[in-house]
Amino acid sequence: MCGIIGYVGCEPQSNQVLLDGLKALEYRGYDSAGMAIVVNRDVRVIKTRGKVANLEKKIEDLHLPSSVLGIAHTRWATHGIPNQSNAHPHQHGMVTLVHNGIIENYGELKELLTKQGYVFESETDTEIAAAYLDYVYKKSFDKKQALQEANKAFRGSFAFGIIFADEQDTLYAMRRNSPLIVAVGEHERYIASDVPAILKYTKDYILLDQDEIAVLKKDEVKIYTLDLVERDYEVKTATMDASAIAKDGYEHFMLKEIHEEPRVVKDTMHAYVQDDIDQLVASLPDLRKYQQIHIVSCGSAMYAGMIAKSLIEQAARIRVDVEIASEYRYKHPIYDVPTLVLIVSQSGETADSLAALLLAKSQGVDTMAIVNVIGSSIAREAKYVAYTHAGVEIAVATTKAYCTQVALLSLMALNLAYVHGHVDKKQANAIIQEVQQLPEMLEHMIEDVQYVQAAKIISRHNNVFFLGRGLDYALCMEASLKLKEISYIHSEAYAAGELKHGTISLIEKGTPVIAICTEESLYEKTISNIKEVKARGANVILVVREDFNVGDDYYDYKISVPKVNRLIQGIVSVVPLQLLSYQVANLRGCEIDQPRNLAKSVTVE
Ligand code: AGP
Image (cartoon, rainbow, N blue to C red):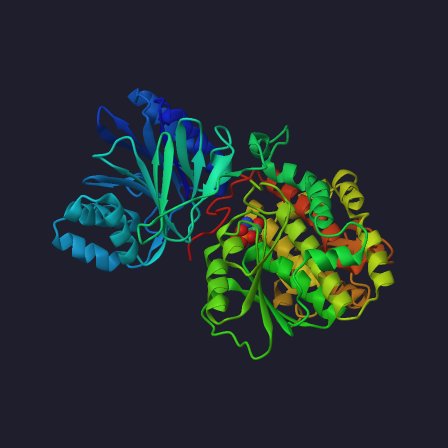
């Protein structure tokens, strides 16, 4: 996902602020970077392919002085390959801007602008947006009117940081669907894609709503609705500080964040229940009336939803459908019974998940969001919101946020089981007592269990299989994604009973198969499937509940996990799989925190 940072202040310190901001946004994933600053009344644009460090060196080599006004950007390529020409900022006439999102109707706008004599250098939709804003601005030389007209002309999503050449002490911004905040210093104002980018300078920020325009000067912020009516705003204060975006001695953010799991899972669960089920009922929305739940998400968030499906359907006997957001938004969902559409999203900005939420709302269906970022777009659009408390997650591959999602969804399952009378108060409170031991168990899984041997087995291969049934199959989906994301090994997660219907043909001598076996009612069946692959030469790494007796001739390496209440079994079992993937990626020398091609949150379709 692209990163945006902008600065306007009394001191000429643009270069440091912009580079600090881009570095704090690097975790989002990108392939090129650039900035625009005002130098001797010129709006100078400097861009590079590759890392922010390349941009920093270019600025040093050019001896570019700092300015009181500047914008900067890290680009995750959508339209056009990652190169310097396609990097942002883009400049046409009076307008220089950076953009996160997609202008879907850029083709028709390009035709119109070409007829007006505009010539384009890049392959990007963003350059079209810059030219169009210049075109409409020159009609009236009224900036807010021009932004209003451009907003109405643009279809798709955008977060813009904009400099007009004829107003060199003012920073403009406008957003729709893509995230953008305004931040407030003493005699400085900032825009940023999210809070970590400005934490070094201020914790005070303002949320921009859909289609709003912000006009920033060093000592003031004005926010306008699309009708150009100025509105009041609330200045919020971020709870995190700059240490949240530091590695604290860990080699990678991913490892740091796995080690934070005991604390953030405890924080998340304690936010909803301490020791009594009635606290949980009071802390969540009343969901009794819903006869079906659609959990609509992407990637790991969706796999957390798969665990929730297994838990809710078994504990509360309510139908749960887990849907891929990018499919759901185009499939004309059926709402023939009272339905809750539940969006799970760490960032709260994933475009497909947001679109699915807006689709449900347009159909008059109740929506709920489980998100980690306070005030994110999905959080603001949903009827109900329940926050996870994972803190800032920097590594692109989610670990602690996923665990807090599963923890919160597990509590939802318990809540639904209780309010629908499937467990009584005494039983529910006994389960609550049991889940209190979760943080300690996670500590044990992180500190005491070794994964290097198993990692060595896997790291030498380019094809790996994960097998499991029920809850374990949902875990396989997440574990397989983790391995793929950071080690670039192709892996497939398979329902253990399904493998023999074709794909078992791919099993040959030495093929690594990671079998997850914690479901009491299914483990003998899974063992049978393990025998099938073992008989064909597979190298089996078995993740198994410590009280299950499994012959040691059925596996080559075993990772034991403790027996816990089924509600939290998934969280305990996923930790060794996260660490295993981390070890494999390390052995393969991969870029773990910012894997190639990936973005921390995909705010484009
Ligand atoms: C998981 O490691 C990936 N980063 C990715 O699958 C992610 O979970 C997905 O893009 C959804 O992101 P969200 O939770 O911010 O909506």
